[in-house]
Amino acid sequence: CWVGILGAEPLIVKQTLGTTEFISLRQPTNAPDYNLHQAMRQYFQLDHNLNDLYEEWGQGCERMKVVTQCLKGARVVRQDPWECLISFICSSNNNIPRIIQMLEKLRKRYGRY
Image (tube, rainbow, N blue to C red; front, side, top):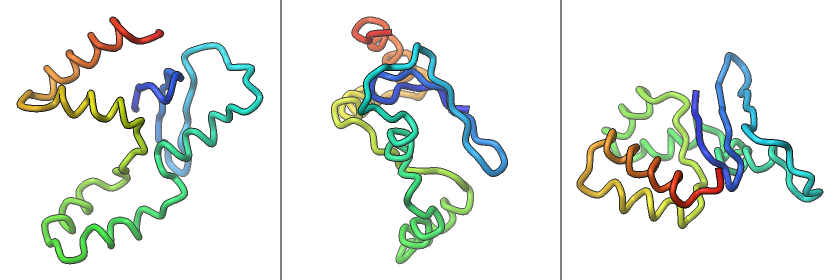
């Protein structure tokens, strides 16, 4: 299960056998050009074949071959650049529980939800 923000959309995402389920935690938007399914496909890069990516990542790097075997289903997300930068800065020289705590405080202080 993954809980996070995609753009301005708070989501819960769960992978099951054969499919991925997701639910928005707010009222649906009436914006005619917004397609949550398409946004999900782009964010998780679902149009890219994982096996092809694993093979490419493992070429010339034995360690990466081992890692991809241990992390089946892991994807590189297409994260908003600003969100990625802030997460990276917070992660510098910190442990995971502290990073999560810092990002949660930033979301509460500056987020919309």
